[in-house]
Length: 191
Image (cartoon, rainbow, N blue to C red; front, top):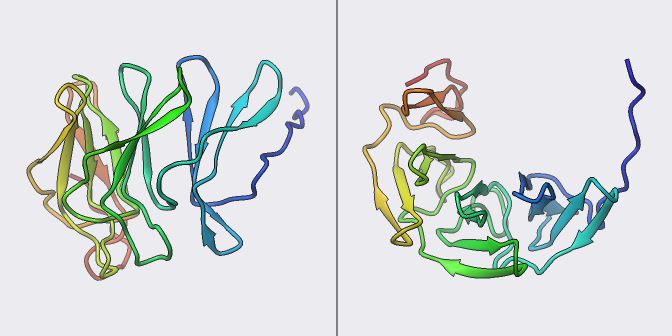
């Protein structure tokens, strides 16, 4: 096997961030936690030049959030924690890679983090579950429509779950897998 290559480091250490591959091949890294502080920092990685670049900061500090590439190439950031593990926000924002600018997007109805975001085959984005401000997982589903720039409620999941995973199946359905349930214990359920 080929030896591993060493890449340059980010400008800001972080964890609980997101990483999204943009249409032009760069990787957008947003938010996270640095030294126990939730941050707004944004960086991009260019594999062609093996370099990191600082980008305009997000409007809000975020960790435990989601980042989803939309069909038009913009990135939707939703929810997350602004300060601590149980201080979640309902705000969302959009990143435009062509201008490097952030704009506010409508709020989700329930502040949450540790949720999933799945881009559906028609281009809408479904966020499912997550953990709310009370530290308890939720079963609430919301769907963002880029054409109307609005969120609407979807059918609730059968089971409240956070820290789970979702995948888009070939037939257009979304599979929610495991996570933590209402009692915060791990679950083996799927729906």
